[in-house]
Image (cartoon, rainbow, N blue to C red):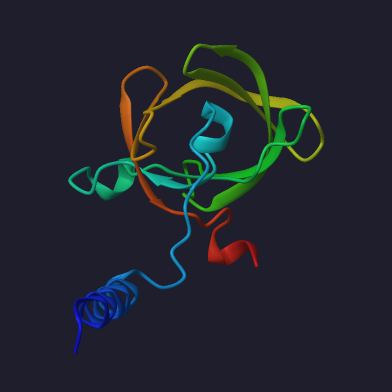
Length: 141
C-alpha cells in the first residue's frame, strides 16, 4: 500500500468518525437580534417558591413587532394568551406591551436577553432561563 492510499484510508476513517459523532437534527436558534433571541419558553429559576414561578412563551415577532405570547399570571397561574408588541428597543432591551384578546393594554415590561440566548432579565431584576424553543404551553393546544 502506497502513501496516498494510507492517507486516503485515514481521511475516510476521520470523516466517518466525525459524522458519527456529530449531533443529529440539531437546530440552532437565531440570536441575531433581541427579538429573535426572546422567541421560545422562558422560566424563573428553579429555586424560587412555586407561587412566584414565572413562565413566558414568545412566538416569532412579525415585521410590525407583534407576536403571540403566553404568561402564567396570578392568581390562577394558568397561562393566558396575549398579543405582544415590541414598542421600543434600546440596544439589547425590548419594551413589550401585552394586549388582551380585546386589544386593551394589560402590561408593559422591559426584557433584556443575553447575547448567548440562555438568560434574560425581566422587569429589570427578575432572572429568566431559556428552557426550549416551545412557543406556547401544552394547555394552548
